[in-house]
Length: 156
Length: 176
Figure: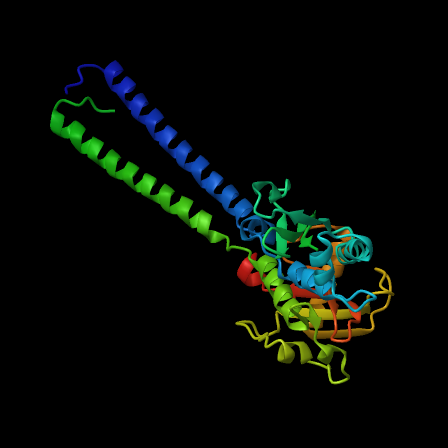
């Protein structure tokens, strides 16, 4: 291509200059965005995993201990719930007391006895919660649902 | 600017420009990747949760409390020995601290005194947890703490509440 006059040269140069500036601007924005994303996404919290793992060893140990606790008749609550078909009376009272004490202010707790445990409706409405389940028999289970609250830096 | 009288001259200038742009874009992509991977993943919260879980399993196995934790022998380094934990790391100083408080279930209140308190690791790290609790802040350079309580019964059906505090520092590997 031959440039016959200065005007043509100038307009061509401006096009290249603008293109260069656009490329540099895009790169600078990308670097800044990468930095911001990197800072915000690189703290891995246990809350990130709770929903997918659906497991909490601490809660499971407490649930086991609760079910193994014996009532005044020397019968453990697992057997009592199994024979009566529900959590009631002393078992219910102790269950509420136990899980309120160990999670005071740190988590939202629900302890449920579910008949027909294979039903889809058993999945708790709190999607990010951890669910620990102990089957009582083929069709029923005790479910402990825990949703931990974040408290600034720590998960308690 | 010189008037370009032939194709060869214009092409030479353009090829220099193309090389310059190639260099700029390559540098930009390098910078993007470098900046993204510059910050390490901070996995200390997960590490404290794992440590707490490990201790919970050790103190209370399948819901049954291990009486050894109430014995008089439970002195220094007892937790790491009993629970098979190794607190050594690539750092010179110990980067972990764990504390177990055992309460009588019936007498338990959040402010009550524990029947037994056992700790292991670097005790200086505990101060970071106290600071986080009072200021409710999230300072990256502080240690990460996890405090959880479990309910457990011993073989004689005596109920306990066990508070487990786990602290992990490792700031240089996770937050700097």
